[in-house]
Image (cartoon, rainbow, N blue to C red; front, side):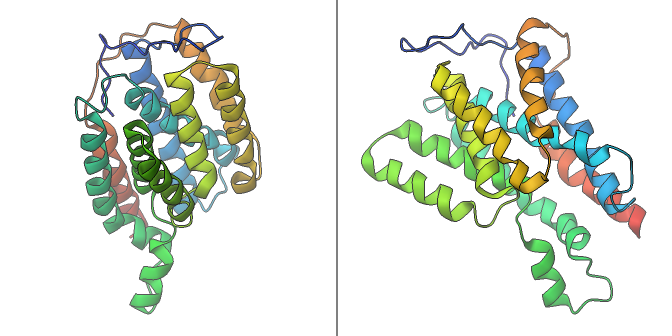
Length: 248
């Protein structure tokens, strides 16, 4: 997810909240925090069978952090003109497919299973790369404007939510994060909080809401963490591959 120090998300004229800006190094820190928590979740799930104390609960912070980092990056005013949307969409699709080489065996438990059945079990729902791919595609369509593209974005939300991790609730967190980053209004913030709360229906806890104070605290902190441009794209399939090797 690309982050530029010089780019600043501008506040809309209709905004009634202060300008929201996260320093580049701090945004990178949020990304690393999400990666660590994601790794904890997968180690707990695939190696320890969800027996590590508090690992599942704490790792529920991961999704909102990933959604927000993506949204913050793509909400920049020049995302469409600079081609940032399309570059991000292509990368998410490519690395989502690569990740399936490891995600499907882990999730489908193919060992000792009739291959087609194991493949189908492991392929659904599609991994988080595809959830972010659908979200970024919705951002692009909405930013392009026009009735046809807005309608396409709506159908992509409805249909895409059927097939990706965290379903429509994850997509809603992404979308309202994007709206809030584009225009810091009370309405957009309220919708983001509601979307994060609705992840309870997936997680069966409200730990996803804990990501929001972390995100807002990030505006007050200036970390000097260097940007690693492709770390998320490479790390996701790589850590799945390592976990798969450990499981044997």
